Length: 422
Length: 115
Image (cartoon, rainbow over all chains, first blue to last red; front, side, top):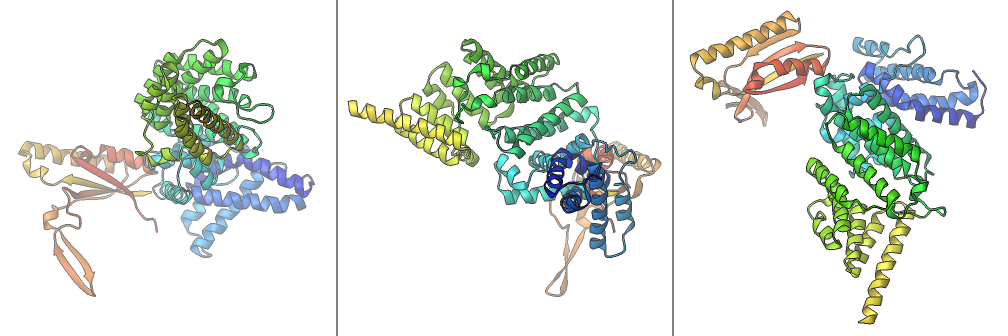
């Protein structure tokens, strides 16, 4: 044991929490099958660490320490549930959560991810469940990433964990023939985690930046453990393309810079090279998919911005393929923007999905920003101004809000000038 | 873990089968039961009489009320069950997928409430 001050203990515990949370939850839950209990026991163990480590020193193996305490908490929890007498099933369950003798805790995260993505779990909750159990995200954060109310999200997460426990869904990597379907949900969750981290453009929010690196860790883990799955490779390529442009999204004074105005020299060339190589590797399998196509769109954007050669026809083709595959309104918005580049703003506006048919679309900032952009190009300044206003109202990032505000003032000025000359 | 595999089938289908088809059907269920027993997972099984001979009982205002017919009036009715003991849900689903009932109905897999 090393003596350490309160601050040091706190930061060690927090670092362990961030690094090991998912691993420890996966290890405990894989044995006990009780995710909710594993999460409770570990959060209590982390709380004990914050109390004990400043007084007694940080343990040499913090993960083993936390696991031992968590195991004790599991026994306490079983006692509370069944009175002082532990039933056999409880004892057996707790016994299986013993710390491995070599102190090297095996990584069961992939198995946990597949348990969460089991076909017996409601489809819409699989990705949020993986985010909560592997990355320790709270229900409110996940709810906002998935456009869902926090209360509803919380209830559905609890229900899914109950089903894993009561129906005894196994923690294992599925057989070959079952793998592709189950993998979809796993990849969707990793991408959702990445998107949540990527939305912190300034990189000031430490927990969100960790989310990005966790997502990369999970994407690399899955593509390494399942090297025959082109979509796993495609997802990693897509994430690398996006990450390569992270810092170029902000100017030196912290203002938002849209893709068309970014300096390609500020992109991470190494990440782009890796993404391109991965795309080639994935395409060799001859099986296309959503993530490979989305990565191909990013690849086309990089080519256009670097060379100045307009390639909107190619971009539109990829979006056509993506839309046929996913029917996603988000894809429809991007497809409409590509149409506007290739033809004109009216073509884009006509192809925009209708927010009346989908309530979530009406609350989706990029929908309103895209609509405003197209309306402004079409010369409908007043309508564009209104759409920008809705987009600003829906945006949580101040830099993007300021950018949209500048655009809004721009179109309003244009509209006023036009009226003055009439 | 014990699971109850409940076979919900269209009762109107059985009488329409020819005698040899009915024999094939009985043989398929017999083979399935035998496979469950040989693997040591079988805990119990029964075929049920059709829901037309079913009766429901409930207490209404302190008085038991007895009604003719099944609880849920639907085309597919519980026609039989298998109680099995397997390690986890995947093993239970794997057995359910082999049950002859999935070809002419649906099999619901429910974990038994462990005491």
